[in-house]
Image (cartoon, rainbow, N blue to C red; front, top):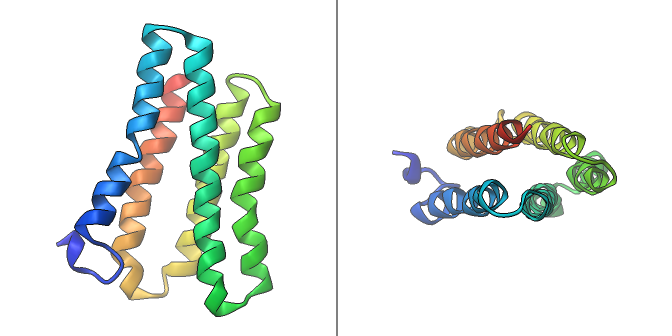
Length: 138
């Protein structure tokens, strides 16, 4: 079962899935009420989450103390911030690239460690879902 591994639990799965709710609410708001305001909510939330993903790598590096990992952990935040300088739909494309890069970073850092297998599956599912929602809007 997915929640029997060391780095997964029912709580982490529930939090992962609930993280999609603001994306879906922003899309609903965008399509039902005000496109510009809904898009702003979507882009801002997306940038926050992408920055958070980088922070996870930063925190993991407190043990490893790798300069390369510190640089890689800041990359998603820089990409997320740069999305604010572009307009629709380019800002969404930049965020998609950021999510994909963040996933690649996690994949190559964790694939060699079998105890992170289910975490990588969870990250793949949520990253694919978030990328799909970004592409859906373009």
